[in-house]
Length: 330
Image (tube, rainbow, N blue to C red; front, top):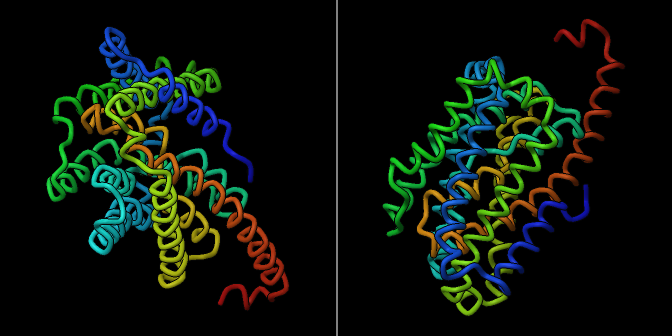
């Protein structure tokens, strides 16, 4: 849990491959079309794997989810805009767009649920919240990115690109879910490898383009450190706000844990393909850097936090066991 994520190591290897052996010439359109195809396939499989019950629960269990969705799609973008306004010259413009793009993304599924479980939190709520975040994210993230880029002079992909590469495959997967959903669940590991392979293809294509455009000449090593600092500040701010916000509204500790972990996560799995659709090819490499760094930071920090929450839950349960029935009901 505390070591480097194996998938992150694969991403680093892919970036190194693109740095020393970038695709160029006749291979460029081939890889771009391949990236489009694997993105569509990935969102199709996401739709196929999500049961109708999970989607409905994720959309209708609104009390807990409303707070998580507000953290994911309101608090994060506001914090990102505030940081950009306070330190506009700290990062290059395209890197700032990457930070703002990160702030517009939905939550993760697997790690949100895993950390909630380790911390002793409300796992069913985490499952529904992560599902709802990803379902809504397909619609909300492109809209938020459009608003942010319009304000800060960037360009995003057209509406039809978003519809055909993201939304339509997801809806088609949902339509066919009753027939292929069981197969998708039986082959979850194989499909997970397919998803990750798709992301690696997109990253290789994006970074190849960026390297040919002079990425490593434009991005000094010191800026990677600054990106990590900005990502860390974002994560800490959200963790503090979600924890104290949950207590302020009187949520039990189990629900607070779900809010903290689901509300602070950002998905790498959907984020990289979305960036490939929403940004020009020459910009994608720089745009996804903040997301890749944030992904590893959130794993480290939340691993430590999950252990602390687990201790808190044991202490809470022990204190609760000492109370009389009358005191518990109060």
